[in-house]
View 1 (tube, one colour):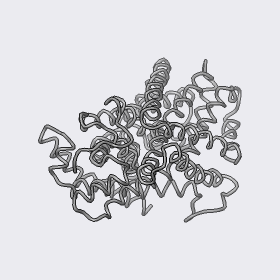
View 2 (cartoon, rainbow, N blue to C red):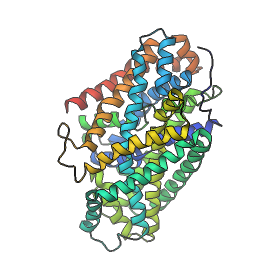
View 3 (tube, rainbow, N blue to C red):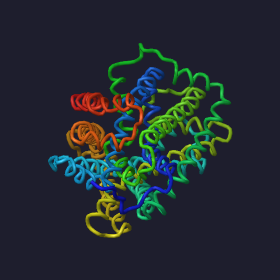
Length: 451
């Protein structure tokens, strides 16, 4: 296949692509999910295993996915059809692109609902709604939010509009401009919060909790959770990274770029954990509070701090920025496909895709309150979409793309695209993509299915 360029454009600079891909990877999974998972699974030992999996499985799979995008130069759906045809393989492999785009749409539908909670909490923190409130009262605020369908739908709609406005403006005026503002803002806010944490008495306890390894606290479930989260936190298997790879210049070194993205994503998760656990330990709160850690526990802590209104508002702006950068990447694969395959303009395609995700999100939001009695296999629609994508669609997408790169694509094409000059490093990466990464992903997927 001759060298082509994406009809959507090319990232202006290497660093812009790094910021965009990091923005896709850095999201609620880093700032919300990783800290509470570390809290539930004993801290340091979980963090160590997570880091091992990030660099042994997550980064090799990300490199394979970006390779496919840059080679195909189109939306994930059209890229995979092109690459299957180039390899002389069955069109079945084109299903990888469809699977990723569909997973991204489903994730965006409930992700927007959760991001709406964070947008709501920016307002609540800025208006000093938690000062002088008891723990029960703070918890009731979150419960009231989930129980109010109109408020949930309103914040969900606000966040979805924010996302589609960026995607509708294309690569340069939309995606690039957004990540060039959002990601530096995210890093600055995170560093400010880390600086504040370093002045607190509980900072040492937080570091001990995050980095002191006690393998007696590490269960089989924790190991599998670390493996699963290391894979999903990098936005793999949902088409986003492949779509962004299609806009990557041939002059950029694929391997060093991917390692940079992996390091930045991991750094955000680690720093967020340190910040959150410093706040938790400083206020005598429970690190294993689970998913409610960010919305029920942290507002209590912020309400007790000097300048807590400002720090709390900054924290939730940080969460929104991370969620926004990820949501943009979730919508992009479907929008790119619509532009390429139907001939409609990007604005119309973005509105169409946004309306579909917004409509599915209505069902997710209402399943938390007035439609709570409606279940699918015993799960609310919100939980069903979450489990379907996380436990089946994403690992299946990651598994199949590894198999395609490792066993279907011509080795010379793979070697040329991946551009790893050191032969031993290349052979190690290729071994992971062909064997070790698929096995790791399959273990997570099978375990989740039988839970």
